[in-house]
Image 1 (spheres, helix red, strand yellow):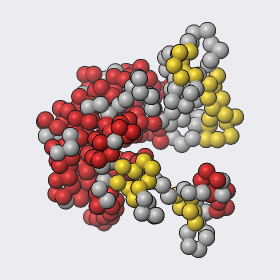
Image 2 (cartoon, rainbow, N blue to C red; image 1 turned 180 degrees about the vertical axis):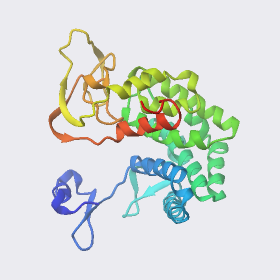
Image 3 (cartoon, rainbow, N blue to C red; image 1 turned 90 degrees about the horizontal axis):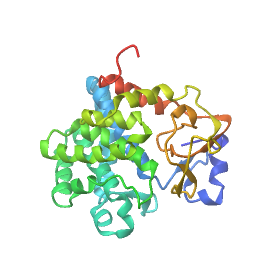
Length: 317
């Protein structure tokens, strides 16, 4: 939620955003409607990480974390695994229900990723709240609606579009469920799904994805490449322009990316391209700006501390 003087009013007045940014009753703030599955994905990773490392050791924080998690998951479950907006309609991307994921051909691209997300949301909610209701929903989606089978193909690749946002969304959901699931049959299927996903993104040397995968499948992960990726990510988070399409040592692919843009046949190191967030396309040859915008450091800090916590990075490095 943003005050108008910080730009949200200007954004809200744009025709393309009129349906998304809406004023509070007093007109002093604007709030964002049509919330995507992306935000929900991030919230449940936060619920897991905060509860695991902080809240469960503090009774007040434990109660607050569980209450917030319960409110969000109940709202989704009570609306048939959908995110219903202020107007009673489903948000554009807020669907995790079997009817869409298993029955709508137009939702084929999301069927594996969103199945993974909902299983991860429910498993996290059971961990945080202790309410067996969420475990029952979890098992129902696996046994009756085949969500675990969907997860095996959560990452889409050629001839489907290569969506790098889905890589980030996938691994934000992969990490909690891989840490929490102890049933050997379910965990084996999850491991097969994340192994397949990692093999597709492996050429990018993605430290975040590598460390998350290595928590259950270390023999299949190139830890050295992941550490090298962290060493290459610039500490200067300003989005300076990076041009690589003219280089003699690169080659443009005959395929375009999902936005119709040119891409390279190989991903360049993070310090040779404009590395911003994990949802960016690492094969984009030319990107960035004039340095007047600054990205945050979470894209580095998340995999770094994940690597430290799980022992992939030695203390002092």
